[in-house]
Amino acid sequence: MLDLVRRLLAELGEDPSREGLLDTPKRVEKAFKFLTSGYDADIDDVLNGALFTVDYSEMVIVKDIDFYSLCEHHLLPFFGKCHVAYIPSTKVIGLSKIPRLVDVFSRRLQVQERLTNQIADTLRDKIAPLGVAVVMEATHLCMSMRGVEKQNSFAVTSAMHGAFRDDSRTRMEFLELVKLRSARDATSPGMACVGED
Image 1: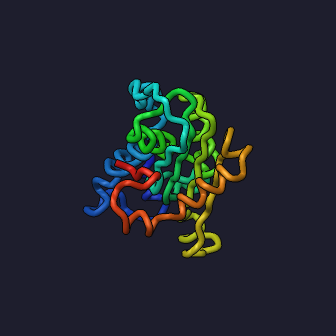
Image 2 (image 1 turned 90 degrees about the vertical axis):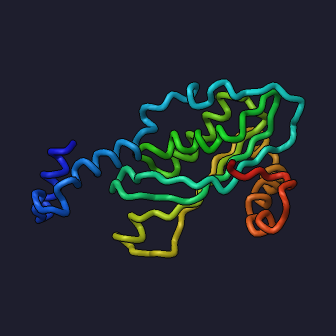
């Protein structure tokens, strides 16, 4: 990878041997290995057995999960917030595991639509809930820095399974709770929504 970055810098018209760029190949390699570390992650290791049998069948929400990913089309970042909800049937998952799951799939070359589905599908497969919902809001630098150059646009994607797809009231409850950002910030912990820990 180091040689590839040096060649890329040269192709861009730069001198890879000048002082400011001398260590750039190492830094780029380190950055890309981190930003694509999700390829090496094992989902079961990430979850680490944090599945618990409980008698609870109401909605669980972890919202405003920051994520950063790389667009597979231009290798430019897209980033934003992820909101995840599920309704347990017999098992719940440790709350901190949901942001970790988001990180696993974000740290790959992605499109937002697939990323959204991968998070939802994994939760559905691992805990067999009555329903699972994922909404992602993201700014894409491939739209704001280049191309159409629309700095204030963002993309919203969703994946709904089970009760969230079949029951419009359940789906609307989730979407309304996701909107409660300012209300959550103004209240003490005790709301139905649980933020990232």
